[in-house]
Image (cartoon, rainbow, N blue to C red):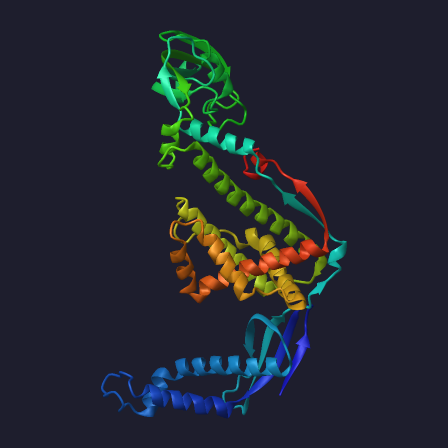
Length: 434
């Protein structure tokens, strides 16, 4: 027999019993099985007396059997009481007497919440749109040319955009400060590598000239010794080189991988690549807008146990990402899990809302959709057929694609039922260059 108490919005407590005889019988059976191979000093395997086995392994086997029985008893009781358990229960044994006929226990746990989805038609969603223009392609070409800039010596004063070579020395109260001195230092004026006042002082200088000037560092400068203080710099200019962009000719086109140097082919490749990347970013933006709307119309309380588990996952993922970027994490150090609770709660809620919406409106991924997404993704690789086979060889990879298709289905459904307003976006903003 079992009973269920409601102790919170989602928290429940199950009270149940396990017959002691069941426990004893299972313990005896396991000890006898263990005796076939157990190595005990003074006895051959299979010849260890039961009493000895009980003395040496009884406590361990008792815990194992009790744990198994608790899990099995709880699962049966949860099914009998139609409980949708979220996470793992916390068990408490209430029977202290080992000879009692029944072992009483309680299990505290959470159940999945009821998900209520309000009228989606009343919700507003902003959908981002973008159309690639010839000007966007030309800007990309200009960027590619700038990435291949060469600098050539000139016999004139330094100007913005030039690369200069110099010696400099900075003094605070007559003493060179830490990091304030360099020899044969190369700097592109206007690139923002040095403070604006420092670069401004170089503009107009001739090769061979020496110049001293006072400069005050910003209050928030990273070098605390000089932050907010006035220093004196002395600069000697050794060289000035002007930037030269490569010509937009066949040689330049070949350098970018177009074997015959055809500029039209290069522009077509750039267009395809930009369109592919733009659509990917548009898709991410619109998915985020749709998911934000879904969180507004979905009403539920997230089970704490699921939020805590997701926060741990996010923390571990963050640590892995930091390590992959070369950030060294001291051994044993952990980021505070509460840093991730808000994000974790949002993700848990969204997952439960998505599950309910998919069930209500039959939005699960279809095999042909999964196949189409894999084939589309594979087109960005040199050997698409190998990528398709790679996905087909592992069910877990296909499940990841299924989840992406499912999200696309939900976004499409939401865009078709909510109040949608389109907002065109500029190329630079979309690409994060605004």
